Image (cartoon, rainbow, N blue to C red; front, side, top):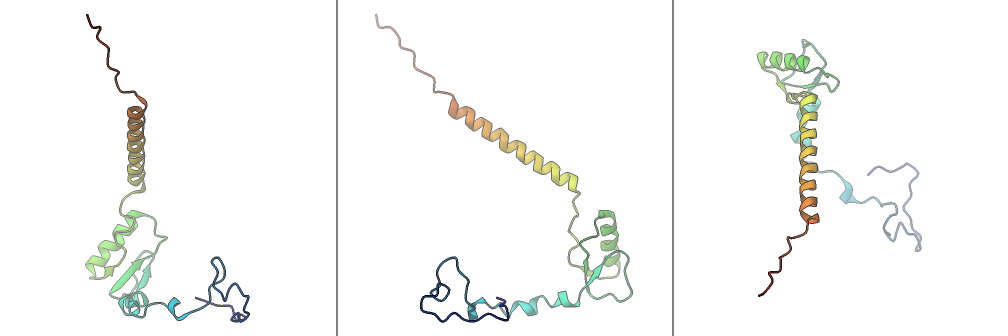
Length: 137
């Protein structure tokens, strides 16, 4: 939790911040700190480099493709070249599926949802068949 340099702890008895009312500024506590263990898990991030296109000379063991490499063909080239050089690309599966297929899947799911909702509405709106009264002779 970051504080402005002019922040001072509220000391007044009537202070809503000190009394910790809902909706007011949170006071800094030791519980807002981050865990110290994950820092050792993700040390590859500090040692990894961004790949924008062609491979440079100083490659590390782990690379990350830059987010602005939009063309899947270029991404495939980077991943193939990395496998030849025995370099791990951490986001090699990103944008592997063309956007058009993703849009088709989304449209298909929306169509299914509307179909099911119309079936349920039709089922609820129709009345149960009424029993015909048979005349007694």
